[in-house]
Image: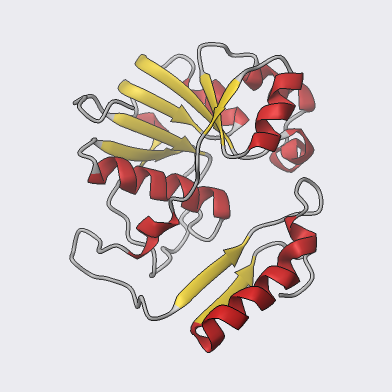
Length: 214
């Protein structure tokens, strides 16, 4: 995204769940754009209300996708958000792939074909969060660009009301599922290393029930 541009950025999520790792990456990205002077809004596809995570500053607004009529840049974040935004006028389109989504399609009531179709929409430039995802997408016939997701530094910046979180404490959200990522096996070792470094200032949580407890 050109930081000198004045057009709006629309990031589309299925819903806004502040404890989901993928959602926090998107939210930190939106905060980064706003800090750089870009008008940025997160749009969601359903009206499910999830309580805000108090330690996560939100510089952006959250609106239903029905309010999205056009944008300078649209960033889709899951296969179904690609289909939901394909007809919305935009100068630039990106598809942020945080995992190869065919294994989780069944949880969304979708098919593998639905997911594969989203990867074939060449109107969207694909960006990924890891080299392993780029390699898998290449096998599916799509090139992608990898970007560094070291965005979590934004999590503890002041929000627009000037509040800050307690930076003397470190909160770590472990993301990993044996279905698609070896992080599930590494979680206990990572937790131990963090506690060795930070002591009792660190709290660790996971939202995958099938992980070994950190």
